[in-house]
Structure formats: C-alpha cells, structure tokens
Amino acid sequence: MPDERPGVVSNPTLVMGVVNVTPDSFSDGGRWFDAEAAIAHGLELVADGADILDVGGESTRPGAARVEPDEELRRVVPVIRELAGRGIRVSVDTMRAATAQAAVEAGAEIINDVSAGLADAAMGSIAAETGAQYVAMHWRGHSDRMDSLAEYHDVAAEVRDELAQRVDALVAAGVVPEKLILDPGLGFAKRGEQNWQLLGRLDVLAELGLPMLVGASRKRFLGAMLPAEASVADRDLPTAVVSVLSAQAGAWGVRVHDVQATRRALDVLGAWQSGRRG
Ligand code: PMM
Image 1 (spheres, rainbow, N blue to C red):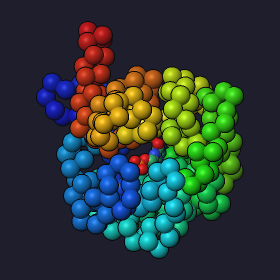
Image 2 (image 1 turned 120 degrees about the vertical axis):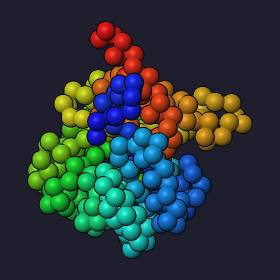
Image 3 (image 1 turned 90 degrees about the vertical axis):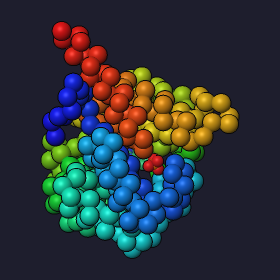
Image 4 (image 1 turned 180 degrees about the vertical axis):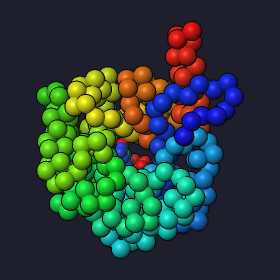
C-alpha cells in the first residue's frame, strides 16, 4: 500500500505486527487469548502502521510446550478470517501443515513457519498447493530443547547453509522460489552473541538472493542489554533500532510487537534516505 501521509517518505521495509492468540506468550502475557481481543489488537497494530499481521496460536518461547493441533486451529482461524476479511494482509505463524492450509483458506496470504518445514513433513507440499508466500526461518529443534542446540563455528555461514538446504527441500516439494522469504531465527537455538553475529552479517544470509525477515522483537538478547529491573516493554526501543538497522541492511520485513515504535523509526530512516537523494 503506498504511504499517503503528507510529508512522510516511507521506507520500503514491511512492518509485520505480532498477534499472538496464546495464553502464555512471554511478551504480552496472554492478554490477547480471546479471539475478539486478538482482532481488536490486530486492528490497533494496523492503525499504528502494520503492513502485515502475523497471527499465531502456539508460543515458541524458550521452554514452551506444544499446543494440540485442534486448539491451535481454534485459536487462529476465526482471527485470521476476520482480519483478512477486512482486507488486511495476514500471515499465519504455524509449524503445522494442516493449520497453514486452514489459515490460507480463511484468508492468510503468508505462511510463517519457524521450522522451515522441519517440524511437519507435509508443510512443503501444502505450502506449494496453497500458492501462499512462505517464510522459512532457521530452526534446529522445538522450544523445549532449542537452547541446547546453539553450537556453531560460524553462525552466519551455518545459518545460511542450513537455510539453503531448506530452500532446496521446499523447492523440491513444489514451492516456487519467488514465494520464499528467509529469516535468521534470532533466539531460536542462538545465544546472545550469536544473534548479534547474525544481525551484523545479514549480508551473508542475503547471498541466497531471497527476501529477508528479521524478528528481534522483545527477545532475551535485547533484554540482556537493559538494567535488571527493565520490563519487557523496555525492549521496544532497542527493537525499533534493530528494525532500522535491518532495513538498512536490506530486510524485506521486520516482525515486531510494538508497531508504532518501529513505524516511526522507519519513517526517520525513510526521511534520512530521501535527504540523501536530495
Ligand atoms: N519469533 C517468534 C515467533 N515467530 N517468526 C519469525 N518468522 N521470526 C521470528 O523471529 C519469530 C517468529 C517468537 O517470538 P514471539 O513469541 O514473541 O512471537
């Protein structure tokens, strides 16, 4: 959608707002569990400047247990139907092919799979069948054990190479490369310094020639920079700064909880870049 705000030169990086329909997400305390509240929250994020809403029914916070498939569907489908029905571009945050399929039927345009097809062998063929865009995030295992999988020699190169293998598998399953978006998976089997190494070397992931999504929002590695008494919301300022730096590094999109802060920060970047063009 072209930006029609007078005087604002928008940066092309897309802002994906997080709509967690979960009772246990670390970042919003499950306040949006109820479908109606989730829809209202999604509409607020759009008013704040979100280009895409990412609707998820399963928390992937470190240590989280899995949600039953039926419960995940029950959480996300009504929210997606309502938001997509209002003309909003929606993605579904799921590792399950059946949920992805139902979400696309309900109007989702993007499948955001944090496991890049590793958690559900049917995901590639379902993604291909639906024709949806597909976010393939770097992932090494489920949340209950991912902290033990953060061993790398060169994290940027290994994430690139492991994602390249996922791209090959997804394309072999029928997904069109033009539909793919890659995500380094910050915090997923990565320790603090490894997240910074990935962010500082986004050019390595860019070598695969596909659009990149960055999801740093409110994650532990940002909290680690703040005083011990800082709240989760205090991570929104560092998140917005990461959004700007990711946009400068060429990111297609940033996935955030506080859309307003990131939108304002990207507007500053847009103005800065327009100043450079004279
Ligand atoms: N992070 C979370 C969930 N989904 N999806 C993508 N593509 N990238 C991410 O970094 C990502 C994600 C975990 O954060 P949340 O529970 O606060 O949503």
